[in-house]
Length: 117
Picture 1 (cartoon, rainbow, N blue to C red):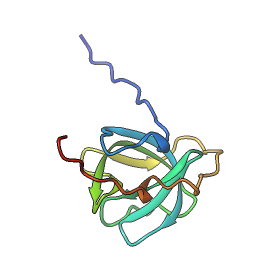
Picture 2 (cartoon, rainbow, N blue to C red):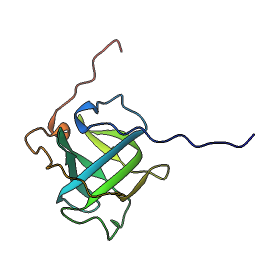
Picture 3 (cartoon, one colour):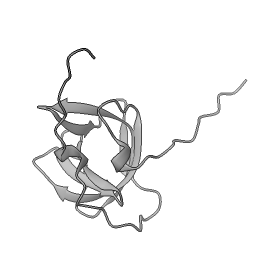
């Protein structure tokens, strides 16, 4: 019986939390940080993406990206989305029409590890 791949389910940036796994997003690059990091987002918020080094050439300010199977990594209590060897980042198939919501930065929220969990 042939294996039929499932279509990815894309989520919004504001739904990402420290427990999120296998995250699929359609985002626009807002700004380039120190390589290999960028800030990208959708209409619900922005998040810091940690890309493979060196940063792919197609990742420029304003680029529309499709991120698949990204993982959350916590650095000093702050959330970042990591594109590791199991994840994929590519240009979005279609142009994205939204404007990223810079007012809500998911990576700016500090999380604390609570005892007993």
